[in-house]
Picture (spheres, rainbow over the protein chains, first blue to last red):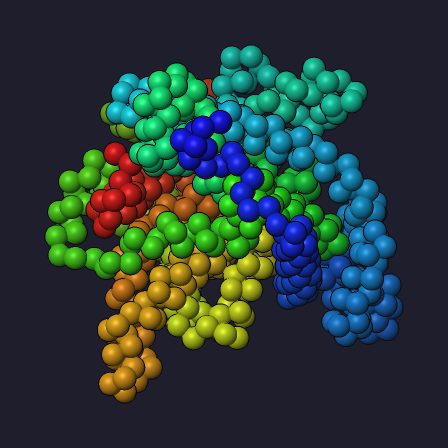
Length: 341
Length: 297
């Protein structure tokens, strides 16, 4: 490798390896982990308080207006039964302690444990989220790179128009349109009974997950496309890219090895942000396509004031969001060696 | 999430230069800004016409003799399953969307800006408290947060606005805090301190104008986002209950009968899209007009 070559590839070398670096990195990761745990605890506290501030409780939600007919003693008995008569701090301690043992409480509506409900719904949402993210990344990075390769040309204009549409059309509109289209063209109607898991019937499962994943993926793809295009155009102006071109490297190789690689940081940031959007989007899309995932579980538990379930699902969502942010931050260091020192 | 915040600061740093005269003209010259402004003008006019009673029919007026009629001269956008005029309902829904979005953004812009300015200017414990709180709110996906808040406060457009406003507040805190950190060290702010100006005078007369450009962009983008989330909540049945003419509810009802009455789904859906696009395009144009350096056209 010549000197010029080294200069042309700023992200390829492992610069500044020293004896104390390993420990410094470990410390930074530990600090980042601690911050993630603190945020999660904070979210748990906030979720607990918000749900307790809501009007109504387990007694009114299970008995409805008849709760008003209870005698004081009966009410106190029920409060004891549901564990809601005690001071808030004690209730929180109880809940947090149980949580650490994997016990998230019981669903008031179905009588099943919250952990089992979440356990059944989580794989569906996880599969949906991963499929949507993949679709979004393929559309976003692929079309973004094509657009950035020839700015102002026809493919670029087309890609930007699609991106604008993807950003402006809400997922519930795309989803509703797709459901209407599937019903009229293929006579296919999503239903909750017919859901096949990936293990029981992989082919049917993929067919069922594809449309909702596409619905979410289009929105994500649009945002990633815009970021990819902007970042690549920015990198393409740099001297080392001009140098690589000057050395006669094939244009395709210049784009993949030099431009795209150095544009990864903003793409990564945007993908992390979009994942948060994705988690919220699953509520809407699972409702439209009747997928038995976490989003639908949350919506049902909230409308039925099934607090234990709502609490558990919100925590799982927050955990997912925090983990993805953590991974994004750690990935920065993988993508950009300069951030490791 | 430190990476996120840094990226946000890097993005907004060049915008610190506040609005200069001629901004409207520069916005109009941007293709996206012009398209956005035209779309918004059309939607706002439709809304105003509805408020002035110029809609063809009352949004809730049922007419059993004309259920599910397609678009015609009498009913430009057709009628729904109760014989209600879809155009009148879309116009009324536009008003509801706009007023919800305006209230929501008023909440998050005021709270978020005050929080961001305080965090950036005072630093220390204030900054820690504000940014930690913002991180917490941010860790709960916005739709979920809005869902929890709406289900707690009950249905109604004001409650939807409060929910949407709270969930967007962290973005304003982040976007404002970064530039204020820089402005705090600016010579004219230091000079104001030396001159012994009161703290509120420095904050409102010297620091706040410095972030007005970023705020203008953020407010516009937030309006588009608020329309989107608000319509999503209505769609999920968490907004004002039927027969309220919300665009989200109309899309939800229209989906079920789209096979026999496409217009009951298409027109409300297009109205939502136009509102979101109008604000997004105007926001993009505004950003480019304020800082030609980041223009991507």
